[in-house]
Image (tube, rainbow, N blue to C red; front, top):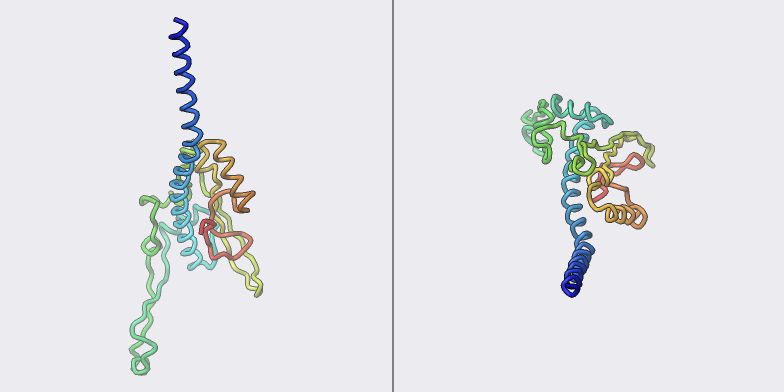
Length: 209
């Protein structure tokens, strides 16, 4: 009886050791797989916000810090575009008055290509996987500013930001701590994904680019 009990305990100990070794190696791999999948979708949403902001700036010469105004702009506003007939490089066409430029209006939602909204422009504001990571929908942090360049030109800038915990917070806690520490303290990067900057003119570049 004692021998059987010892065998059972030994098998249980071996099974626990095997599971511990599996978890030890599998947890980092699983974290990396899910992190990359989620980051890819957050990046696409950030690109959508960037395109909407660029369209807003094209009309109003500034960015907006408000998702309400940005979404209303995309849903209801329009842009003035210009269409040219003939070529100004053709001197004869110019002389004959055959070169014309015509301005026309197009709805913003028909000029900006969105990839992640599923037809609902209100999704612009929300960070993908934030429900899974935090238990509720989280919005991107978004703000605007004006900065003076070295050539003394004042330009508008925008920053849209999602901290790592807002879309990775439900993953392994220690793996997330290690990843954030590596990004911030080793690579000197932001603690999340973002486009633009409030302190430099970056042409709304993403920090993954």
